[in-house]
Length: 119
Image (tube, rainbow, N blue to C red; front, side, top):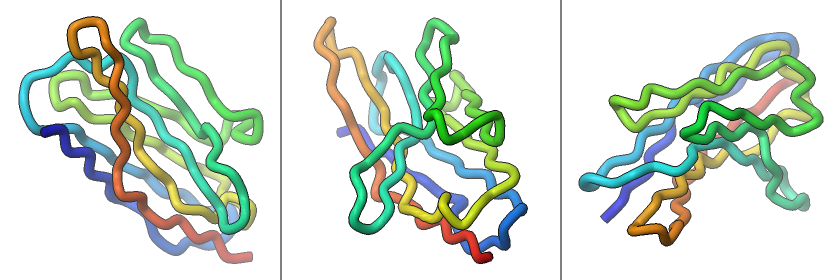
């Protein structure tokens, strides 16, 4: 069974930085993509950053060059370096892993890690 575990959230002042980590485990599988989404109270979950196995990356419009997603393919891991954090970045951040099971894509989520940015 696939397990997705995140770490790295916390409390930081505006302008500060945090680095989130996520790894997928639980067997041998082909990862189609790994990425990060976030959800603030009362708001819909939104894309933060996504990395496909083709090397393509996508970022939410609000990122504006502040965040960088990276992968360690050997470890089935994805990281999110967040710089110049703003209070509006406060949210629960969720790791998303899409796995290719014989051409059927299945989506897995981590439990979420809280990021709080104080003003």
